[in-house]
Length: 360
Image (tube, rainbow, N blue to C red; front, side, top):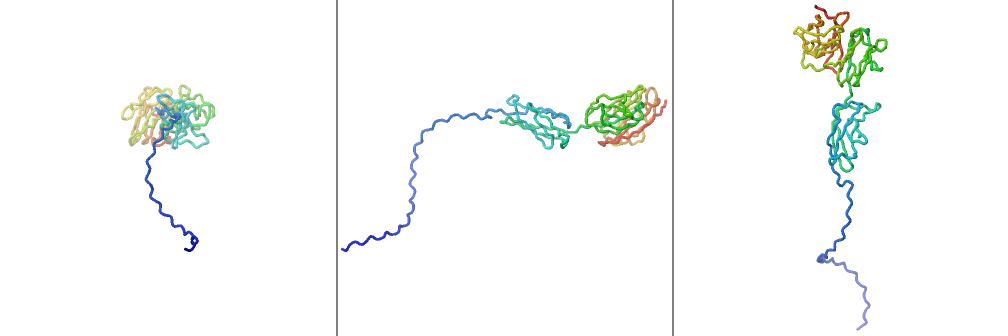
């Protein structure tokens, strides 16, 4: 046999074969031994905190007048006790700013300064959030905000200070009315404070011999300061004007005021008989009001004082309040009849002076 030939070059590798099917899953191994127990964790800062509760909110009742102090007390409990310190926030849509009073559980209204936008008037709802950093309580209250306003008029029946006088705040200040002639009634001026003491000034600017004591005036009310003669001097009276609606057409409200120095109690009668609320009215006193018809023309009245009868007449307009201020001049009895509308917030004041005719 011939010699063996040389080995041939290896052929190219064949393509890889397909993977075989996965083998069967083996049995689970035995569980390992439990590890050692970890250390106990520390309690969180809020652990065990009791809930906060608004027991009550007081001090928001009534009207909060702009510029006047207003404190709102919060009664907050936590587990039946008063919490030592809380963060408290009060928020509203449109109402004045309200802040917590440091060191307390109370709030106070922070009114706008004079150079800031004025606080709005109205009824405002507030939400109050109180928290100790862990638990939260929510409360609410309503606050009615208004600018204090009241109205004052003067009736000058003081012949001693004729021909005219003025009324200014005690101690000086702006004139309320300018010069008010004798036998005249002013319109109403608006005052923005609730207590007023007035000095009556003569036309020459000297302080007259009369000054009113401080008068507590109510919000949204009309008052009249009557200046009148008394035993050679001057007296004053503050009266509250009755502005209650009369309620029906063709009616007006009528009152009398006795400013007649030297005259005893005054009584008034109409053709329908004595007017009950106008009987025996003493000096310096205003009667209660009565309603009278306005669609029958002038109504004759008889004013009785010191055994004499004096004839007069009234003719009020519908839905007005008419006050007859009776006063003495030269031994005769006069009436200053003042009227203003009950339908207007800022009514014009009209008046006339009449001398009553003595009948007996």
